[in-house]
Image (cartoon, rainbow, N blue to C red; front, top):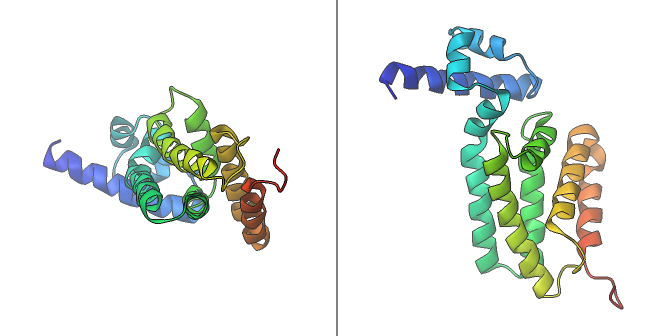
Length: 183
């Protein structure tokens, strides 16, 4: 990438981060370009969709979430590793208002610019889930898709009912534990 194009790219990411922090992910992309001192054509040349902009913004943090899963899997008991990672995933999904919906869409839509990043993150969580299930720390009947739906629901609660979010996360984690007497 040319130096001027790289500067424009970086300015757009900086302005997008600021706008998303203030207004959520549904903020105007044209306003982001304007705040960066660029035309909207420059923004769309670098980021043809809102999802492509989000993917560029979240790439590093999603990779960190995957690295956290790897680190936890080798240092912490399986159930505790999954619980810690679930908390981190909920926190990540609420870094910008409205993000959890976009991430869930990206996870399910193979054509989404977010799909690869989301499915990679899901694979990290799935490895922790399977490891915890094999250790007997987590119910064997929970699927990765169900786990991610529960993470999304908890992220939604954190975003929309912050006073209850801690309790919702506790209930989610309690619900993952095996039931006495088995299922």
